[in-house]
Image 1 (tube, rainbow, N blue to C red):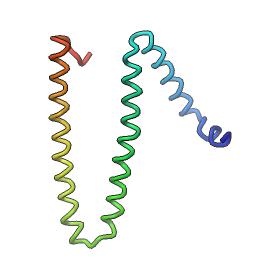
Image 2: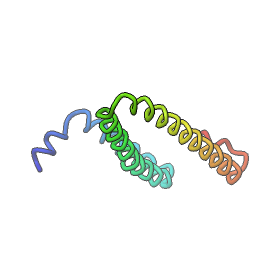
Image 3: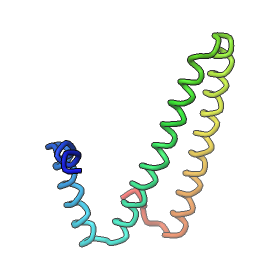
Amino acid sequence: MWQKFKKWANVDHLVDLAVDAFLLLFEVISSPVLIVMRILRWTIGHFFLEGIKNKIKKFIHWIKDKPLWLQIIVIPMVLIFLAYVLVFIWIIGEAFGEFIAEEFGDKDISE
C-alpha cells in the first residue's frame, strides 16, 4: 500500500490535489451547493465515461477480428447510431437549459 502511495504521490498529482483542495475550500466559502455539484459531476464523469470508454474498447477489439465485409457494414452503422445519440443528447441539453432559464427568470445562467 505504501509503495502504491509513493508511486501515486508525484508532483503532478500533488499539484492537482492542492488546486482541487483550494477550489473546494473557496467554493465552500462562496457557495456550498457548488461542492455537491462538483462531486456529482466528478462521480458521473468517472463512472459513466469510464464505462463508455470500456465499451468502445471492447467494440474495437471485437470488430478488428471480423472479416472486412462485416467491418464495412458495422462501422458506418455504429457511427450513424452515435450521431443520432449525440443529437438526442444535445436536444435534451437544450431543453434542460431552457427549463433552467425559465425556473430562474431572466438571469443569465452562463455567468
